[in-house]
Image (cartoon, rainbow over all chains, first blue to last red; front, side, top):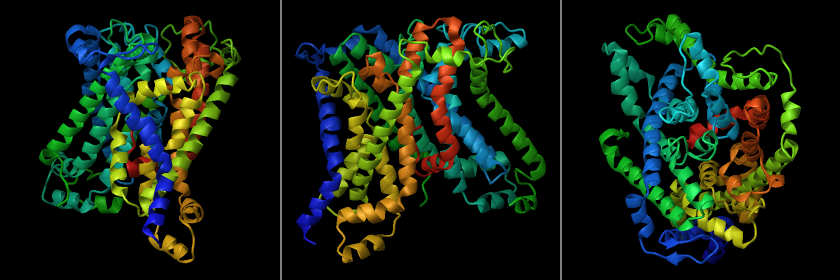
Length: 293
Length: 291
């Protein structure tokens, strides 16, 4: 078969992706990079203003700083809690116990339903002043606050929602745990190693590539969270910007105020944050991620 | 397995029977806590409107009624039947696009030799990490200039160009596991690349095609951001947008109707989960899924 024919066939099959890549990914990405240096309201042609959008973000936009703070709190709290919970449950589930498929399926269900509006609706009512959570607290004589409309608590309801969806990292942990040879534990217990020592010396190091993978994926997903904050706050990010996720602010700037140049700049800052985080994660792997030699 | 464990003194589970029971108790308790909110929503949808929250955290309504379902169904100017139909059409068309395009491209990456293959493959993997926000505004400008705002095209068409690299990656992983001898034999017999793809690779890849189709359907069904941006007229709304409007239009008086429609919006996903959960879980375990 000739090389030309071979290349021709390859590119024929690749064609859908190539078109999509250039017209819907690379082209738009470069366009938004340009737009981030402009003032653009969709109706008039973009007007080049240099780095003003970026300067404004850090010097004159308290809402940007608020959204950054909310998002960082959300990432820093929800990801470790979610992963810790996923790992803990995976370890309880491990080693072919009876009923494992059923447990696994039930734990996974919230992850599957999680991003739909219905679940956000449910969360709003769970943590409402007269919602389920306060109903339970009332049984113990505690009068709970209105979690959703209190700026001190609203973000935590979203953290709980995220932790509730621990199912998909748990499944990845389960697959990882299965890779650890049982004879390592057997040898360790013959040497008299306690279960906690086995956890720190065997489970965690051998699982570290999976932990690393889950961490990167979950952090990126947490930065991109949108629907629950939008539905719970009615699109405002309130009360007092306490649920103003970064992506929600980006949406408001772009599609409520039509400051599309500014929204593009926000998108590129998000890319930069994710890139920096990913780079740091990869660069530090040699200190904490254990790969087989 | 348990026998082996029983013989291991000093091991964490030295009393396997006891610790087995304890494990089940812990797990059942966690299951219960996790599922409780969903059951509470289901029970709420079966309560009469007069029965306000009032902090009732229980699951048993004082009086069971399904009145919230028809009321919620016709609660907006356009009924939820239209929204369900819209969502279904969008999700089915998007799913076909995703599976078709991703399988073609994955076949090229996994099986065909061509110049620049590893370069394109690396680029494709690179787009996995890219947040969609970065293409959002130019895409919007593009679709607007094509006069596609307030149509379903922006929600469906990109899938036919394999923009979600995740599905390509998923399929490449699977295709690589199919024995190469099969296509080589077929090629000897004079089969074209297209025939090999259609007659050999696809029929052998049903599990991964099904997994991709299921995830694609669920993600499109649950998508909120896309419809929020592109769809403005209510007759074009998806279920998710319909629910959002319902929150805005209904006060606290009709929360049972809101719950009823929320429950209905989850039914398709729940059914898929019920029938295909093994495929879903294997899909996550083998590729490491985002959600």
